[in-house]
Length: 348
Image (cartoon, rainbow, N blue to C red; front, side):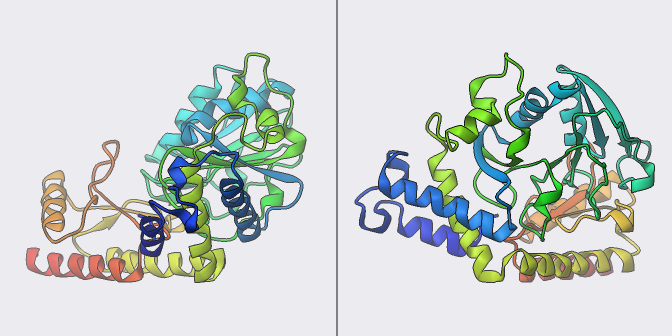
């Protein structure tokens, strides 16, 4: 979901961006008018996330999934070893992909309880000789979220923040690399934002495709080839919207408020059960179920008829999932909570 003001502004500028006579989709990425959009977007992201000068912002095509390969290709060569925390589908997929490029060690896994919880610091098996430690901060499919930043000593921290970036403050200085597919909280699909400590770039494998080289992308300011111009433009509009709402601190307060509304329904319910362990619950993706697959399907069907789309859970988990990213207004969450309570009353 994108903020309505962003969609309205994009619509108003669709055929004529600020008197240029062109749509952003028609501009040269080297033109003065587009470079202003590009630089403004980077500056706004740096300000909102308080990204230090030690880190560079990259706009890379291929979404988060391509980063599953780019991360080990660029970073694992230092020792040939990396630690991975497997707390859901996407970290598992990233670990499998990384296995093509070096020795991958499982720092922790929540698979023993179907990824319904996040392991704590004391549960992590850390390798002092790892090139990096990798985790995914929010697990969309299973509805869990890391509530702490793993301590890894001198081993660089790599984090996939695709589904909760911009939903709260982040101390970027603690990370060697952050990446996020933009289609959850930032912009339309088709790009990943990469925030990298520049000291980590330059040791990629010789076989690394040039458009996956962090060093090359840093040196070319993400413009070795034509970047995803329109996606970057929409990202810029979203960042300005976040700023107008009060920044990531306001997003964090809103996320806590919205998720509490739904978790209160689940905790009070005799019909619905939350899937994630309370201490690991995500503020972005609320997963729940009833007592049977048949009742789940019936609820999803009736919810859709009432105007609530995309509540069916992922095929790996079944049940239901309500995704309440930044652009979802609190009124929408309140309406869903009301529907769930009314549905339960008439069903029991």
